Amino acid sequence: MNDLSERLSHIPGNEPSPALGYLIFFIGVTMVAYGITALWFGMRDVMDVGGYCAEGGPYVSRQSCPDSAELLMFTGIPAGVIGLFIAMLGGAKAAKGAAGLLLLAWPALFISLGFNFIDYAIDPPENMDGTVGWWICGVIFGLMGLPALLGIPMLVKAIQPERRTAVLLAFVLAIGAGIALGIVIRDAAG
Image 1 (cartoon, rainbow, N blue to C red):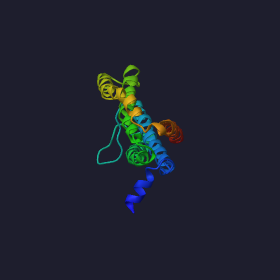
Image 2 (cartoon, rainbow, N blue to C red):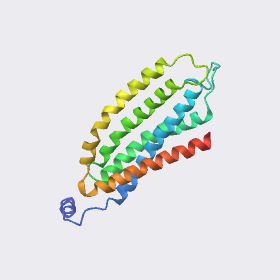
Image 3 (tube, rainbow, N blue to C red):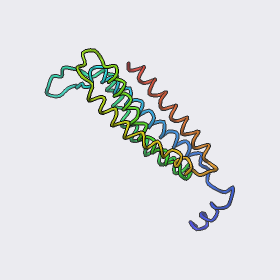
Image 4 (cartoon, rainbow, N blue to C red):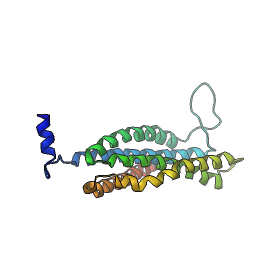
């Protein structure tokens, strides 16, 4: 029976519909984009108070964490990680090579967080003594993310040609949806 279904799937026009794969891929990429956006905003909230904060435990902290930072990081990190797995599953069902686009989460994460470090190193919060560490982190994060962007043409070319446009459209729309969700949650928490 498996042999027959495999033979039938190779007949033009008889391929399984990738619609469910696109939906799962969209949901997963939205979660990844939300995760990176939430982490970006959460990091900025922590940097606004000097770059460190703490809550609870046996010691009294000099600097409490902003409520929005806790919510964003608590939801963003797991959403991003779980979203990667969901998007891999959906990408594999949507089109050959679609899941490879998820490698772009690496430069998106490191370049965006590196930008935060450099932005705050240039314009630090009040009462900040030095920003050398933020400069170093910003440059290192940039160096970790920027070279990965060179792989974009290869990742796009690897997508099944007849489904490439649909995959890229779902990918870009999902990124937009994840960023919008991050902004809405940040504004609601802020």
